[in-house]
Image 1: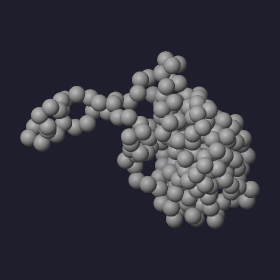
Image 2: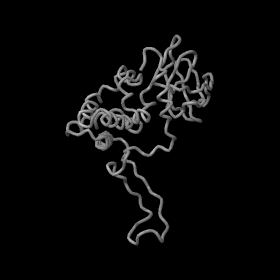
Image 3: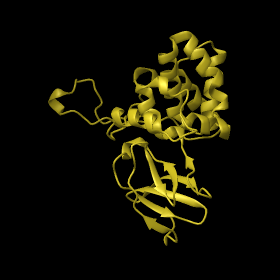
Image 4: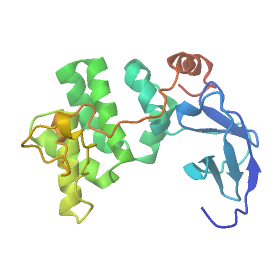
Length: 232
């Protein structure tokens, strides 16, 4: 964020469709904010949405009135519980239009064939969640490698994506240092002060745990029934 914010500060409330209304246009925000007021900086060409001092999303500002802009990432946690809603969602349509979704089409098709429609879609969503922690190019490389190996495992996509990132000179795998247990509880041969690397296949989900509250499924049900004409 700039030291001096030149935007107009607003505090709209996030509606049941996980959108805010700014100057008669609607913009999606992460679903965990449903029902809350968020701080917005309305700028000449962008709409910035904040959580405390952190920018959580930057939307290009829409021209005209009554438009909307949805990001698929904002609904992923909920869609994992309601996978059937993904196919006709406005977020998916926007992702396809932007070209960002194209590389995972083959993965989704293969996952649904191998695991069924619901579980295959959940596997896809697990892969899409990797974009929050890894560059798009690394995730695409991971998808390609796993499909070439005849697999549709999101865990393997995460591993191959991190390999691709490391090969490109990116950061090393995450190292997690667990809390040291009390001395009397620690085995005699355990080094309680050392760090250890957590293997991705040994943990589900493959992403670091999210301590934020899960979005309301009831709210998403209302989203599906109240989406404006022309959207999912």
